[in-house]
Length: 259
Image 1 (tube, rainbow, N blue to C red):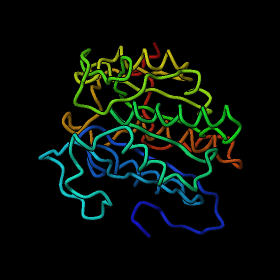
Image 2: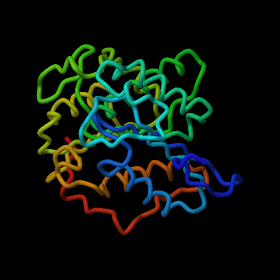
Image 3: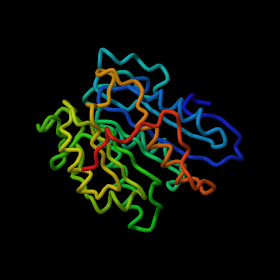
Image 4: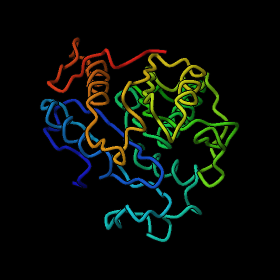
């Protein structure tokens, strides 16, 4: 067991979740580990295969070395922080996953990346070679102009170059697409996240009052809003479930706006 999977009876239904961190982040930062723990405590009758890998990223003084990472420490630099490196790792992880039982969650740069993965999946669906993902959830996704990520309205040439998003393929690649952005986000312009959601005809786009970039630097180490969203997607995916599991952490909706 690799520490990423919550192990229960193999006879129980399996839901796969890939959580992609942001730039300079790591699996134990922000609300990632909290979300994994809370979901595991909620779903006792389901095998949740929750993977939060360390993607090649810029070296950060805040990020501790990851002894379990398959990526050599010297690769954790801008030089190797590429779409190709991220895609190769994601594909390796999801190689044997059933797309219809797979949920992708991405935060910040990871939020843009899950759009990219959905587009790849959509192209495979179009070719008749695959099924769409069960759901994609992008939290404060970085915007993109052409193939260059955008922060605070400015192109970021030091971040991984992504291809220009093709909305039709993104939508073909997932049954459900949700975008969450904070109204006070000082890192990613909420407008860029909203534009991305609109272009790809997201099923839901929420601008959340009182939040910024949903990260540890703002004191966010728990994120009930995302927990509730994932619970809903898991229950939709499970064939035996017709109603979402409601948690004590469920927040009221007045602080959430739908643009």
